Length: 311
Image (cartoon, rainbow, N blue to C red):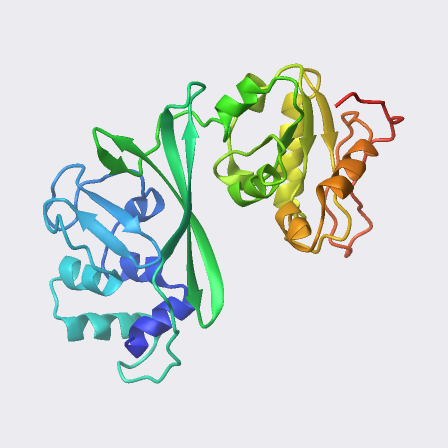
């Protein structure tokens, strides 16, 4: 990898280079799901950012097949050579083209697993793929959402209402408790234990309206051990409370940013999990907030007496 390119990647300056060196309007970079007039050819609704990590910008008229990276974008939109593009980028970074930097050893993104979100009848609506790569030996991940339209893959999910994972199973097992987690990996971990687990795409940023899918059910929510995880769990619990019997279970011995899949990987069993759930009282609507130990604020749990549940 060229030192200039490595410097851009290390400093997280890809979008900065696209905007201030390639001259791509900020609205294109901030809304990757939309298409805009191309600043090069002027073609209407043809240009969009297709890969923020690589800095690949695609215009269906200028380069419909190969889109390249942020260096290719500078070359194309500025009309310069490869060497001139590197010079312009180096000036933006305050470097010289020969500046020495330690290049990152980065492996390509690799699809690890794909989950299919379906309607109630089992017809696919959209998909979520977990991708991973190694950067200097450290594993990074990202999730890509897409759908099929007329046999083609599109990453535009505008207007597609989110649904819970395993929706048909939720409908077919009305008497089973429903375990809600944040993320498909956690859902898989619980499903492997034989539990009826579900989640929503997008993690803590999900906009799924849970109350549309669950009514008069026993619901158990496991928050991820971080601030977004607790907030998301509170939002889910609030949306279901009053229509369902809800428990929010704070697992013991979770480090910050860990979740129930980590707890299971360390040897947590279905028997131990069942005991923890049974000894957790129903949520009474009291708010709770995450604390990493640096403040006096602690997670608030309810204090209702334990109910005997026949499930």
